[in-house]
Amino acid sequence: MELQDVQVQLVNKVDEPRFLSLMREHHYIGAQQRMAQTLWYVATYQGEWVALLSFSIAALKCKARDQWIGWPYRHQYDRLKYLTNNTRFLILPDWHVPNLGSRVLSLCEKRIAADSITYFGHTVLILETFVDPARFHGTVYRAANWTCVGKTRGFRRHREGYIKNEAPKLIFMKPLRPDARALLSRPTLDLPIPTGVPKMMILADQMRALPDFFKAIPDHRRAAGRRHKLPTLLALAAAAILSGMRGYKGIKQWIDQLGQKGLERFGCRYQAGQFIAPSLNTVRECLMRVDPAELDRALQAWNKAYAQEDQSLAIDGKTMRNAMDEEGRQVQIMSAIGHQTGMCYTQKKSTESPPKAEIPSAPTKSKRRSLSSTPSPSKAKRSVPTPS
Image (cartoon, rainbow, N blue to C red; front, side, top):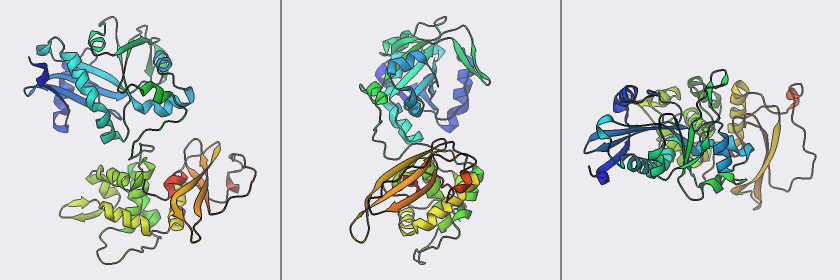
């Protein structure tokens, strides 16, 4: 067997039943259904399947891993998305060849960061996996230059919390870039990810309801060539930004990932037996011509219907890039943002240096009605989409 001819590719929809069937038949734990942010890989040799791998969300807590990374506790949960867990690794029975395992792992390591950006909107910096020492020694991972950083404490997750199973696992870690641990340990994380990261899951009912909140906004586009309804365009843009996208290209990328069901829920144009997604130019023109004040009022109305309650607020101020008034002064925005939901309760725009004022304390439930405005469904920088 020539290891150089081994290739790794993502499992497509057609092959998913075969992938699950082989896992159930040959893996000692069995198959694992696809969860959020899961990637399935198959290694092939001359068209034959030789190995299967599954990568999914990282463990929420792992003391030895967290100490090895060295990241602060307050940043840990926000940055877990930059780790992924190799939950399954199966070499099929007829292909137990020396060095095949480390070769397959190496090929996955080379592509998984790009695949994560494509499908989930963010990169991956470190891989992790847990090995049962009662069955294996982790030889394949050691051969692929993974580092054993310790053992788990012998607990497993349960629907009611954590229960002890008396079976600690070996913890293996693999940084995908030399400075991965240093990056995750910094007070501020600066990664060049242009399209944003997922922040909120838009439910089907919310997709259908969003366009209704934008129906009162005047459409300032030219009547000639107008193919998509304004409420639909604004709803698509708002949903993309709520999901973490940045800029016109990020919004368009999010729209393109919607299936026919998703486009139908937003009320997209139906033509030739299918629902049509708007083009990048259409999205850009719509957002450039819409009245920001009208858009903000519509978003606040949507947030009033769907927002959760916050126990505390943060005051956030920023200078808008490339935004000037008629006298050449740069526009500044100050916003009140909920800690728990990340929602923007109110924002004020100014072109002058604001006077010093006492920052109000966060509203309690009894004081909530005294706020002068209702929440909008995003942070200030998301309320009016701007190109990144």
